[in-house]
Length: 152
Image: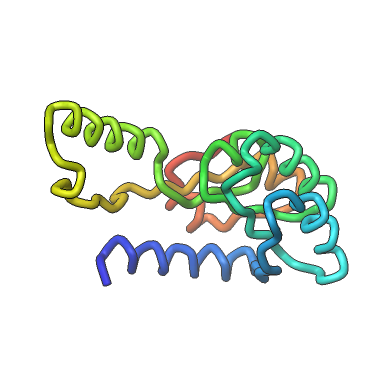
């Protein structure tokens, strides 16, 4: 297991313990509203969210979660910028730069099958303090210190 994977698992474990997150399962992307609203009966401390297919509804998802006092954790920072509580995932800008490098090599004649598969190496933790305040959450200092960005 790589160092990046071990660190990721360790950080996610710290986040889960600090916020007492109970996974409530995954809902289809087209049923995100039902998924969030149905969490009330399960009394979850957090709601994992699917990244694909609901990108255009980021703000609505965040507002619905805040209205229902449901902390959210996402895979992309754009959700946190839209009002989600936290993100731990790859930096999309870096990923797109890497993809552009592949396109450049292919356009210069490289065979795609000969190009190595690259794994992301940079992960970032983003926490929205404004959302935490709206939810009445106190973010542990250790988590704040580990965050790459705090949105206030």
